[in-house]
Length: 282
Image 1 (cartoon, rainbow, N blue to C red):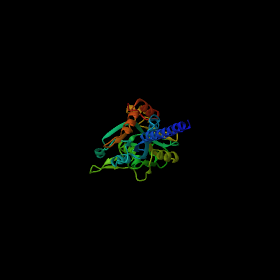
Image 2: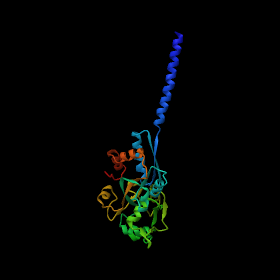
Image 3: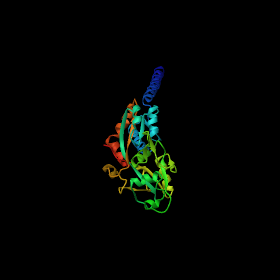
């Protein structure tokens, strides 16, 4: 009887070990698969919120979000260092040769912001251009106080800067047809949306521009040509400084990346886009 009991215990122990091995094997199959997204810091907060919601429903997929600017997003796809690139501008002609797919995930306005104490409420696009190219240097020239204007801009390679400069006419072409950004050399350069907002919030007499979805109480948003920087005015085309948010992919797009994009373009994903203050595309 004792011998039979011992044999039974050995069998149970062996089964337990084998089950543990099988579970370990299953765990290996369920290891998280990363989707790496690199690019625009304007798109980054939206990407992070979408990724958080997506990962709650897809425990075996991990979305890794990195900034660096739209140009860095294109570079990451070109060098195959990311699954998706995030852009806050249109794809340029010279970039299209190594980009096989584009996905517009949202639209956004670019808000022109000042320090909260500024008494200027409205500007024309031409006035903004002249401020950013250094032609207008004092707030009294646009109806404000007698104080020098401190210009804050994004770094070269920023999608927000590219869109802003193109729409306002700061971006021109030379005799060879090459694009030239005429932003004044005295401008303070910041490397992210949040850095621009912080700099303007802390610097009286400053002016900057940020994603509409990143606006807050710390800065003042100007009307442009009499139009508020609002979701409704961007959709109607009344607010002229706007751009798309795009994900780009190279030669291969993983099934995990496809699943994430499908979620973003679903009703749930686009509802979150709207909740974040951006404009849905479906």
